[in-house]
Image 1 (cartoon, one colour):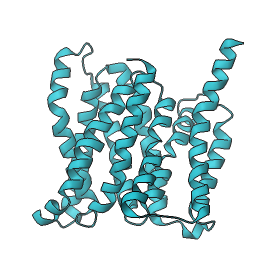
Image 2 (image 1 turned 30 degrees about the horizontal axis):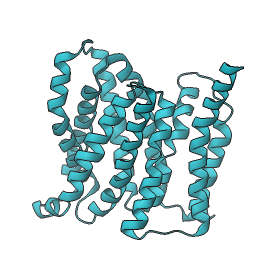
Image 3 (image 1 turned 45 degrees about the vertical axis):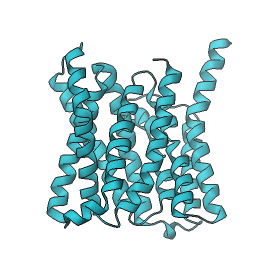
Length: 296
């Protein structure tokens, strides 16, 4: 697979996730956030299991204890991102959530700076300032207008950035994207269902009412899109993966406007634009600089 093909797969995953934002929001009219997370990822784990078993027969690299530890860490990061995003959607809009979640594009290179000790490109810092300014504008120019859901979604973006970084390096070592996918789905499902059973009431009628959203997000947003992500990340860099995945913000905001009738004041749209420009700049400027240096 070429890098261009991998990036197109990531763009398809972003489109599926954009639709998932709408489904995640409407599902909570019938069911609690942890039941929704647990059921969606249980479906995703079951849907990918047969393909994981087929992959295991052809695997060239044996799964070591270290790999299992990485799978567990990635699963916990996925659970952290899914839970903070889902709870956040109770008190923020789909549009805000989709754009704030996209901040992982900023956080992925920052993780490389602080934890992998890699020197950052200079664009990281103005990009971060632009992104924070965008969030400020999303609040209408009043930080007090930021909801708890908005702040939880910032935390969600941090978890996603950890998941993207670890998934990229792990699947490069193991060459087993489906094993990684099904394991992280199972870890997330178990964590969410335990919390849901303790803290959230549920009935079969509630599950039936939310079944279309659970199935869409479980099969497509979780099963298909996350598998596309980890498969494609074998052939591209974490930073490039982050920029293509960040297109989910545009898909999410567009579908929220079409299906949910969401809108915001002009300053909010400027904030969305700033966040998206920051995402593009963080990826495109270093790539353009690298190509110029190679041709010089």
